Length: 248
Image (cartoon, rainbow, N blue to C red; front, side):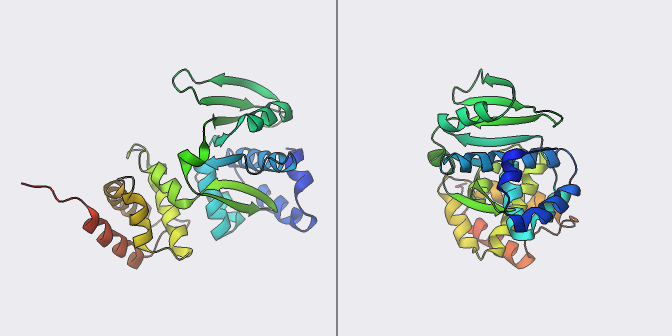
């Protein structure tokens, strides 16, 4: 597959690593991650690097790649679509820079569109595009660099907050929460910083419930992306203290 914006933007010293990593990827990650990076390179080339952000699964993968190395993508859970937010300049850049198979406005959400990309022999890629004020909606935004390409993603804390409102039965979201807690511990965050952030939106109880599910489902995960037991115990203790007292 050829992703011109991406491959033209990779620094010479990172080309070999890029080729080696992508040779080991499986679908859908191989195609959709490449589109994610290609889009980021395209926006950077147009001076739109502050006008968009990734959230959802490929933002999760970006943080894991930053902290575990780019090869972690080869054993990641995979996702068929890109969740992205941006302004009309970004949307127009997608329309002008790619073969658009379809671009449909959401019948239920006025600020959302679903875009399907398909170019040459490449697999189709779906983008769920949010057109509102993404800084207001998602909070903190970070820039991770993969194969020399800067990519804007929402922060691990913002990802956890968003994943906590997903259905508990969809285990991939709990796995993403556990992965982001692993990242936060590795980056030196404390349980207090996490609970203080979540208490502002009333999500502390939801995290307590997800930790229980996460211990049962992902403790022995082959990826090794799991917070330490000490970190989880401290987080559990603080979450328990922050839970509201119900009067009998």
